[in-house]
Image (tube, rainbow, N blue to C red; front, side, top):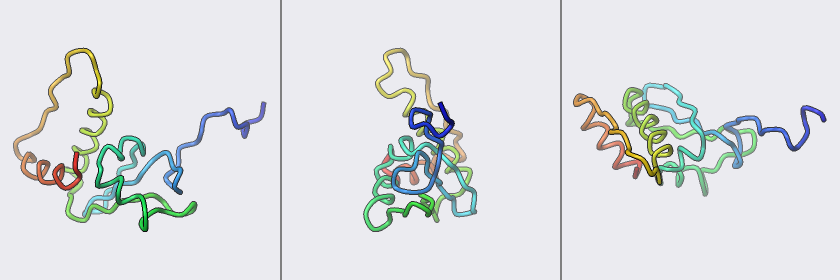
Length: 115
């Protein structure tokens, strides 16, 4: 069996409509590469990646969040991972911790991202 065999695991990529990952870019230029399935938990991000904004096979799937600072986007990524892990979870779900100093920015961002 060769390395390029179709049964081997798909290599992670951020390029093209069938990419496995998405690049989220904060207003201060920090890039967060997250699984596409996780990013699409946000209806806003999902909409931004389809239609006229859809990337080509050589262009990365990136979403510029021009009003979101990196410390807030980092917390959004943590929340999306938390949501993905604990949705339909049968056991007790741990509380998602939010520091008071980012609570308002996080609330506004989560409202914009529809998460």
